Length: 290
Image (cartoon, rainbow, N blue to C red; front, side, top):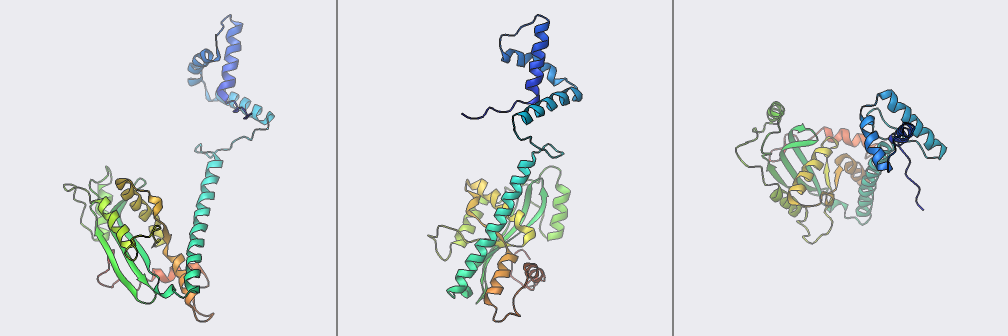
């Protein structure tokens, strides 16, 4: 049989209330009736009174060998925080393993030089809550043998500016060199943009079942993921079809896979990021999201 759920502080407060009322000659037909009456008193109970019954509930849990949940100062169970951290670490490790295994296989069969990789970048006016107000996106294709191949670039009208963020959007437009969003025009067609990106990723094989990863700089991962989520939400698609990986991790394993002697390549992944931040293509004309 499944274990009974542990009783909370209100349960013991309610039982005490029931006993006190019985002493006064007041009897309730069921615990449901007691719960209604005691609930009104519980709403106005002092913190000290509630603490008394919380201590009682904790004591009873200890007697029954039920682990007592611990909480953060904001009331979030530590177990939830720990689970979130575990999932984040697992996702990071999965990404590293996925990139490393792909590079290892392609290097072994000597196809790494001709393997196409897809980079994505977005520029956003500002972040409104948990949502990025996107103004521009670019996906480009490259391989080690030929370098830059081609790109798909879009200037995006995010539509109405979120309430309270007009000054942030204006600052962002100045910093990025983008026009202010035109609120008189409808939002850019996110469904069409998503379809174009998918077609771009499938250009070598329209029948491929799994889309190739999209690589971006570490500081753009969250913005790119949110942009994909916005598009997928509009289109009713599953954003999990897309893998957004860090470009520096790819760069680290790529360069080390083609080095000809031990003095080449990157001894640490952080050095790959340093090299990428030098941005030798910053002033190359014709690239989107400059």
